[in-house]
Amino acid sequence: MTRAPSSITAREADEQVAGRAAYRAVIDRLSKASVDKHWEPYRDIPWDDPEYRVDPADPRWELPGVDKLGGHPWYRARTPETRAAIGLWRVATAMKIGLQFENLLKRGLLNYAYRLPNGSPEFRYVYHETIEEGHHGMMFQEFVNRTGMPIRGMPRPLSLVAQVAPLIPLISTELFFVFVLGGEDPIDHVQRKVLKDDRPHHPLEETIMRIHIAEEARHISFARHYLRNRVPRMPAYRRFMLGVAAPLILGVMARIMLAPPGAMIRHFRIPPNVVAEVYLRNPEARREIRDSVGKTRELCAELGLVNRFTRRLWRAMGIWAEPGTAGR
Ligand SMILES: [Fe+2]
Ligand SMILES: [Fe+2]
Image 1 (cartoon, helix red, strand yellow):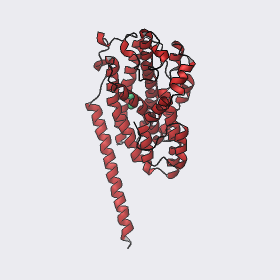
Image 2 (cartoon, rainbow, N blue to C red; image 1 turned 60 degrees about the vertical axis):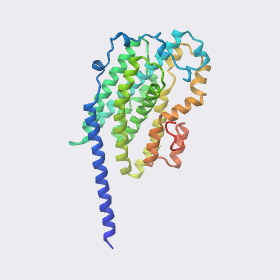
Image 3 (cartoon, protein in one colour; image 1 turned 180 degrees about the horizontal axis):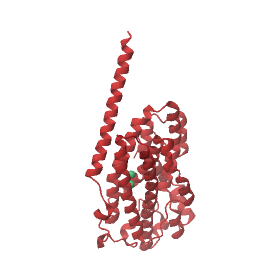
Image 4 (cartoon, helix red, strand yellow; image 1 turned 180 degrees about the vertical axis):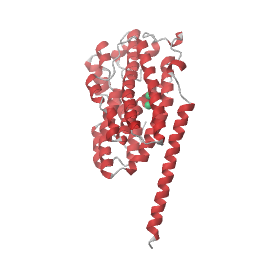
């Protein structure tokens, strides 16, 4: 009779070993893929090709009618040059905020890697990811420079607060990788949507997005596998704290990524009622924020981080949707 518990324990131990082996195989595969398939912005993007020149009046920058701002009568009443310039400004702002987020991310990854023990498979992968993010930062900044526009990234107060993000791994690596997904998922969501919209895109924008989506798929995969591997083994109180912090971080991150750029509103003198109609009182804008964290929300639910109490926080942050609706 005494054998039953020990065989269960043995089975659990076997499952744990199998789970760890599968996790390790994923990390090794991601590291290998980083070597086999990667891009370098100053080798793989023909910046000086005349086709790739950035002209703010190029009609390909114009926002489509299905866009929240692009379909607004105020926008439609602008000259074609202004419409194109607003579209380009928005693309460049997304890249600037993206490179600022990835700067914080790189510093956090290095803080995480600093403490990893010898032989840790995560060390090599995290260095690959940091190097790729270095390339992304260069390619985004080069694009911003070539617009010739005075593009600003995150609002200054937010940017100051964000400086604590690289320290999150010192408190909780699990929370850090939720932060990572909070930035990477909304960017990825928006870029995939743009590439799928069947409109002619500027070749430079298209090349940058394709490179970014391809490399981000690995980063997102690593963060998700890391959380799947770690969260089930966290002590209950730490898992509860993570469940509380996750919706707060994700709600703030999605808003930073998808918020209306203040500098653009001032530069083009977009009237307050237009901003309110497009970004604040618009159910479509709220849906986009909710959808952009959809995959991370479903991962959190799968990991047991959503309960009656934390669901209220997801709702309060405006990022809750019933399971099974991500990305719709
Ligand atoms: Fe990136
Ligand atoms: Fe990334």
